[in-house]
Image 1 (cartoon, rainbow, N blue to C red):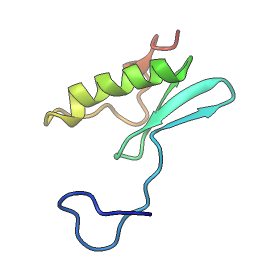
Image 2 (image 1 turned 60 degrees about the vertical axis):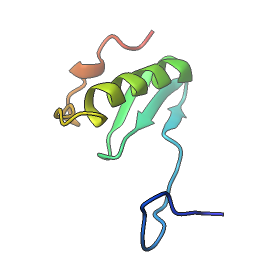
Image 3 (image 1 turned 90 degrees about the horizontal axis):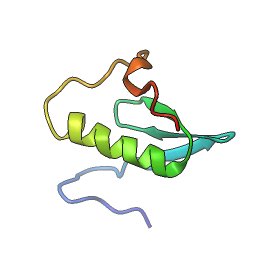
Image 4 (image 1 turned 120 degrees about the vertical axis):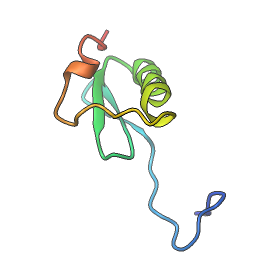
Length: 77
């Protein structure tokens, strides 16, 4: 059953999980429509998501460019 979140009005938007894998690489998605990764496993992707949220989503800081892979470079274990 699809439900409204607190404060939502109108049609309930489509929601899906943040994490996905392609072959053996893991990624996470964010609201900006960006896929972040690759990471060696889901735990590493989850840790990177936590870092992402603490740096960007919880502040007014600018998020990394979609085309910029430098932000996550060397994050793959």
